[in-house]
Image (cartoon, rainbow over all chains, first blue to last red; front, top):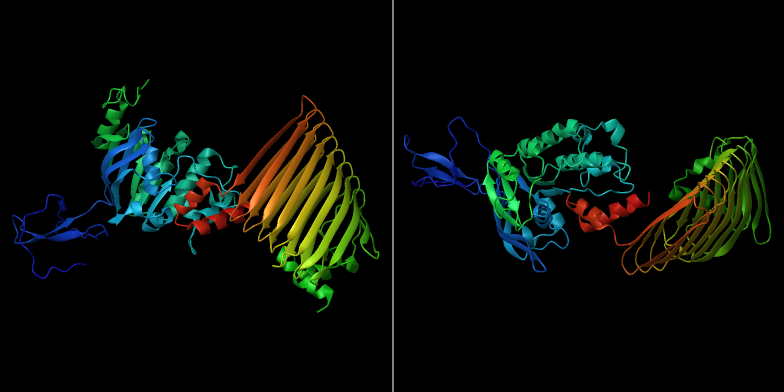
Length: 290
Length: 311
């Protein structure tokens, strides 16, 4: 921790958080700035500036003559859930692939900082080592690999049972099954989430995590997302399901590769419910709700 | 070290315990070159094998209605760098009999040797045979291995075969199986091969669905690296009403290896159906990226995918 030998009298920075006397705070690695300021009623007080965990600036991705992502700017704070809504083809999954570093997804321009590191200069597994992971909308199937192995990937000691329980699957029935075609789409989705849980990521990108999940089990998915947050992780939650998006701390609506609206999830959901796209009235992105 | 001791020593390389040869409840035959080093039968099993000047020749019969509880172990191989082994065996699984055969082919130090197996297998009505063949070859790649078999599956009978060559470098492998299936018979042929260096793999499996409601599955998993080559031919013909066949071939190619797959599907009856799927190439991109998104390096991810595929 940085030691300030002589507190500097300064005005409170605009983006600072002020912990009160009863608050014990643990500084995340991304809290790069802290100090003391001239408080109104006391001589000095601490302030903390928490930098974004994910900081996307001017991100553009062009394929042929089509802009899939168009000068995208947004941030995700540590330990927060950010929902990303948008019509099909608005660029949500492309953004997920681009952040994770999937093959063929190299941005045309822009920067992405992850916990202060230049994410775009890293290979996929290096991004994962930093604490970023992705749960695919259509998760892969693996011949021969058991669920137990899948949930303990790269870890010598791990107990995957609680992860399965958390996604509503019985460990006795599932641990020795294989992550193959014999699993239903919903089962595979749950195992993907259990896998994300097991690695305790700093940022999990969840692409439609509740797709194919029956109504009765949707709470399992919501609980998993909350657990990632309780573990100190942030979530970029790509979803069409309003009840899932509603658990987010903040939300954005993506349209035609651009963020067109950000704020409280309830407000973003309300915008998204609109019959047509609020940005282009459906003329550009083609989004017209039935 | 005697020839028997040497072959026994490498048995664990194909997943078998050397103690099986001492177990009176377990039938076995151990053949080195053209010599039978050890054999034991159990009730319900007749072993009529003999040595000739250039082969081990004979019959193995599982008698009607008998279930052989423990697997029958066939251990064949060579303990020397050079040599030849030819086995000509006729297997009869009589009506309603059931047996499992574990065949271990062991060539730990071969540099210029040949192993030729010519088998006929007859599975009687309602009978069942599970045949698992595991190969262990040393690193030299000097073998020529030719397992050829003709298998006839009777009415309502079942046949499951599982061929695996997962360690060492074989040299040249030429498999040729022909399976004829009668009414309501079932055959599942699985082959798992990991070829290295300059290995040459020829794998031809043909399933003829002759009887009504007969079923056949050919499943092949081949991984090639270095400069290995493979040509996989899966043939399924459906000749009768309700016959169902499927060919599932997957080949993963790494390094300078080459692979080809030739699925041949023929249907001769309007109420029969045969499907096939074949994939050749590098490791599936999505599988690879999923594992890398969990922190595995590309090399670790490929190793895990390949090992899973060959299980």
